[in-house]
Image 1 (cartoon, rainbow, N blue to C red):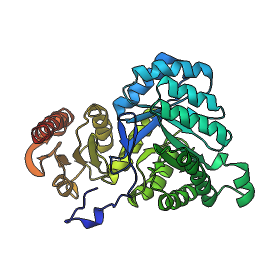
Image 2 (cartoon, rainbow, N blue to C red):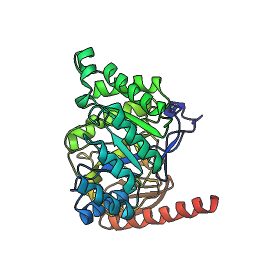
Image 3 (spheres, rainbow, N blue to C red):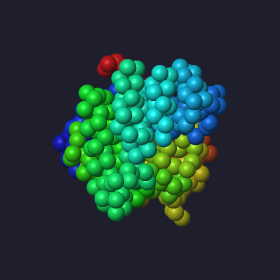
Image 4 (cartoon, one colour):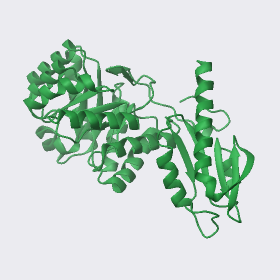
Length: 373
């Protein structure tokens, strides 16, 4: 992130890491932090899986992971990869042959869990397949599936055990002169995951994939992920991330982007700044924001919109946003454009007019960006 001399308290110094590629998507080495998710369809349901990948890509996913639990899924993966608009990571557990098959099917990356993929010889065969087919690898350490000897050594899953597991498997890849890898050390415990990631960041220059595994449902998982990933990202740790939710994968993408947007690390779409509403509101803020979120979901241009119910904070927030609306009295409010008062508007015409103004501003920003490029 470039330094802000005016607001230095917003600066984030990202950790230096090597750059790898997941298909055409760069990861690490200063590249934009990527947002990943994972399909929850049966991989053998090829049309359903492709449709879900497309929906996630439309929501902003840069990379999508697909589980490959059996040989039939390996065969389906080939067609899924061919039709996917984004690079596909093959999720491999328990059977190393699935990793080899996924590489042959065209996966951009293989996600292997060192605790359950098998012995060093089998890992070696997967590495060779990845090299032969131009795949990168994610070493996926998980507190719930650590190697037996590490559990015996440390007595229970802990940050030190997770870091040791990760570094052991990094050495296996490096011993085979394979360096196109990223690594994660996930746990459902936010404290354990954060400590493990901090230790890992100091021990390797490999790109780091962030995640709080098995975080829970939409609300619980969002809060846990925001706390864990948000703090790590604020410290400059993390090159790619996945928010794990027991919810539609599209929600994972949305939450991932919102975390990055809140930290100023990545921008996509309209950032709506809105108040929680109270008895002073000049219109129904909550319902209006709900409608606007739906009507503006198609806009990918990074921009800001403030929707504030009254004049206490409304004018101040509107000064800092591309488009703003502040509630007033007698069924009308004030529209702001580029931080300046533009005109008064009735509440009845508010939603349609705001959508029109946001779309116009997005087109203007897109044109300016294209001219600059």
